[in-house]
Image 1 (cartoon, chains in turn green, yellow):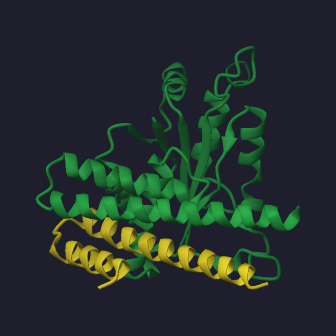
Image 2 (cartoon, rainbow over the protein chains, first blue to last red; image 1 turned 135 degrees about the vertical axis):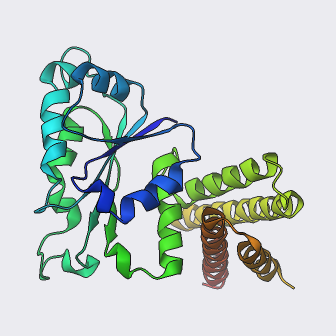
Length: 227
Length: 54
């Protein structure tokens, strides 16, 4: 799966979060890190978009939206002909947003300081995905990155890796597949702990089979009770 | 040692012995995943037991 991460950050050099995310995915060959500048070639950008399966807009929240550089880029590159013309060039691709803010998560809800949820604020992007026949992914929002403790930062790193590289994000089982795949890659890369990793991988797979069986038994029992 | 305790201890050891930040993060997140797997198995097992006795 090929993923393009479009970074819209007017002060990229001073960002703490963006280098953290960049390092998180630099070993994935199918991930393209693409910081926006005001100087771009429309045809090249469109060509780049066509080659992707998942497109991510990644930006800090500026007045409840993306920084102007993203809008400027969208207005130029996402021409009506390109995105809705005869071809619907982006149809079937996924659109994800990675949004960071210095405000607390609890502020983004009815009755709290910011009043609206992040999903509500990001509606224009959802409308864009709808119009262009893209699949809109659940948001990945980062609140107060610098307040996260070291373990929370590491958890965020892996969440981000999954958001960028996991072909399916819907179910717990999709997470399992991602972890299995990562373990397998480490084993094949002759990690010094390959033997232990293989044991861990086998155990996790067995447990997942067990969980699948339990879920199946439960659904059968529910069916019997309903009939 | 039960399976969950064994997995947790293995993953903690791997995390501690790793010098790469991304590997440390991976083992931490994998450990979280293992705990969630256990929780789900226990929850479903409890629900199955409960329904059998209804």
